[in-house]
Amino acid sequence: MADIFIYLGYFVLTIDLILYTYSFFRKEEANVFFVSYLAFCFIMQFSMEAMYHFHLNNLFLVNIFIIGQMIFLGLFYNSIFNVKSQKRFVLISVGAALLILAIQFATDWGQFLRFNLFEITLASLLVVIFALIHFYNMLTESKKYYYISIGVMFYLLTSTVLFLIGNLTHNLSKEFKFLSWQLNSVLLVMYYGFILFDWKKNFSKKSVN
Image 1 (tube, one colour):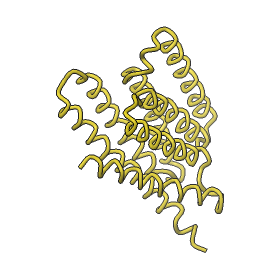
Image 2: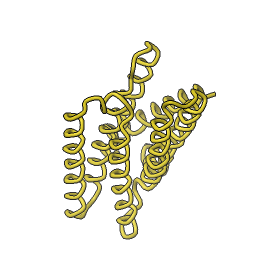
Image 3: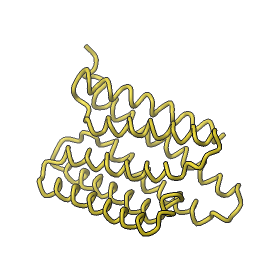
Image 4: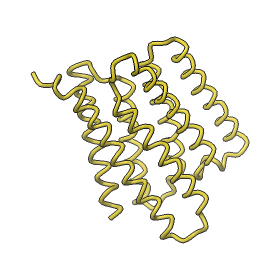
């Protein structure tokens, strides 16, 4: 059953990437940083899947994915914010987070090769804060990327909890750990679904000639 949601997630992500790429290159509507984020997700998801099938440890790719996600979504929110102080906050906070993580990896490289509780929490909650700022801005501005931000907040908060549980239950039964991965695959499908729905609401009608 878990494989169904995993491959369904890949399918929805692929559709998202195709649609947003079309809206960017053909209609010049989609945000370049968000399209880049989707492309990054696509590459990372299939890289992790390939390493899994070759029975290779892909946990370092999970850490790259978490960090890259923070960077791309940080740039995305920075580009749609209109207030200079908010844009400055995004750049400074992402830069500070990268510096802190660089110091952590330099002092203990092993953190990069396993679930890094601190990294996951820091990167995910930082992006959630950006999404909250966007919700605040939408009180007086247009509601563009509204459903994307809902998906970001929903997925990052819930997946962070699951990643924490996955790391804390490292020595527990395989069945319990497998359940957390099953739930994460379901949440990922829902997240990519929010992104797809946002495209439908904001770009689909505009794409019809």
